[in-house]
Image 1 (cartoon, rainbow, N blue to C red):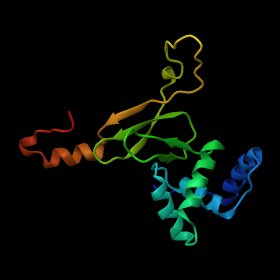
Image 2 (image 1 turned 120 degrees about the vertical axis):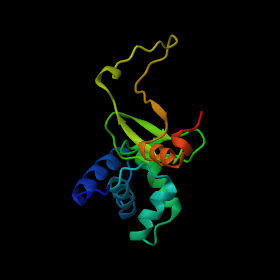
Image 3 (image 1 turned 120 degrees about the horizontal axis):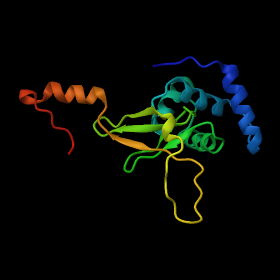
Image 4 (image 1 turned 135 degrees about the vertical axis):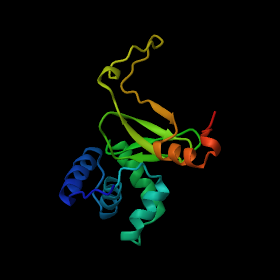
Length: 160
């Protein structure tokens, strides 16, 4: 699901956030950010590097890592961390949760239900919640369909 992102939108948003943190706007930062906005599939840093390098061959992996870190700190991108996998980067800044498919490793956005915006969570004294995110784990529809097709006698067995 490729999405065309207007350059002026990217430039305006990036320039605004960078100026708040005292960082300067660069073509490399713009390119990495626009690469993330083109496809909302939660890529790893390595995947961002490969996509961005295709159009900007002189881009280095270090620049991509530094830019992703800066985009997270500026609030333009979220870092999604799974227990054993590489960090993933999410350009969807709307309030939402994530679903991690244990078969293909894909990460998918899950919209927040209105009733989950203010759950009853009991925190120890002194703790203050500013934001929470839920990570769901399981099998995506595509992997479940593949497993069902390859299962003998229609028996479906995924991870216990």
